[in-house]
Image 1 (cartoon, each protein chain N blue to C red):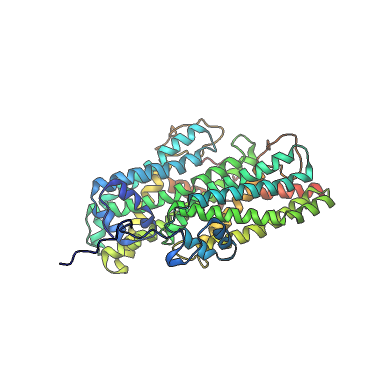
Image 2 (cartoon, helix red, strand yellow):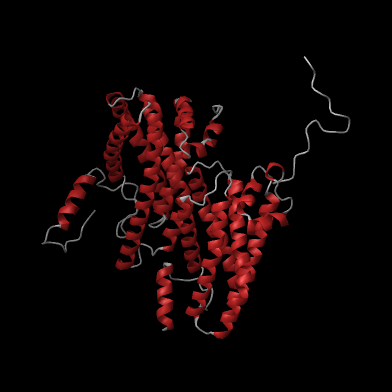
Length: 240
Length: 249
């Protein structure tokens, strides 16, 4: 029986593991590269998470999401000024984080139901990526929101503009999510589309729960519970 | 796939079970009553308990505690109470499995149901928290009650359909062909429906009426049954007179 070859002195018996996302995926090496994948190649972003120790990436994505939410929140708060300068950024950052936390368990179950074997950590990274993309897009749209906020005094009109921008940003976020989930591409996965609708619903209700964001009120948080459709209906009728 | 050896490994197989992998399901069932009873106690106890508690918060914190106990109990008692009948049905309808396998199959589907409900319990809690409370006046309370009823019926139906589709896969792999598996699933569903609805009727209230005290079981818990109340409600809908009398579900 031939003995196995002994590695030369100073070398490991096993080769050094390739950097996260490299190797068979010929993927990126750093966090910056992953961000580029987030924007342009969601499938590769998803694959780069598989088996990699993605804690630094997750931290970077969450930090980006929080920073972007604060930046966009400043623009939202600039409409009313006063206490909203700090309340709106805080509420938007907290609202997005809470929405993601509330919806993460159901996303995990939906992923399992469709036969994807995915670790909760990788799933969290994809959701963090979705949030980061959402708020980066929102932050890039902030100048548009700011211009409108300077030219109107209508809370309903400003609320509508923020809503449209949120729909645009979350649409791209959902595109990332359905393509980046490791295991199987979810582009034609009805369960993931249902989850996206659920997340959108929760985020809208969360912002209603944390109102006011655009206008002002006597209290920092609402004293009356309302469904978001009911709240918008009331806001619209008050502006007429 | 190597069979799991410890309880922790069995618990970790939940994603595979949720994915409808019949091999994982059969491994779980083959592990023996000790493993599947313990895992079921954990999954159903925690999963259905969390969901029940989330739902109960609408009425009062104590109702949440009561629901957290009652929901898992209903599922476990349904599975155990029907186990002998279910075991007899299996060979009668063409699947040669014993009492253990039939109980394990039903428990597996309840485990999946509980896992799905548990995953949605944060959203249920968020929904309930956003609704007007039971002391917000008649109209607001009725709207909130209707919202809970409709949304949770959809959720439970979804979880139930998924759990039963998975059970069908397991039964098909046990039977070797889909026809007897379908027959047995329908028969089990009918039996579990009768037992489950009546246990739920006895275990009411889950939401509780604002004018009644929060309690684990009603004083008249064993009076009447779900089907009788359903029949009376349906006939009331088609009756032209006496519609102003307050209905007491």
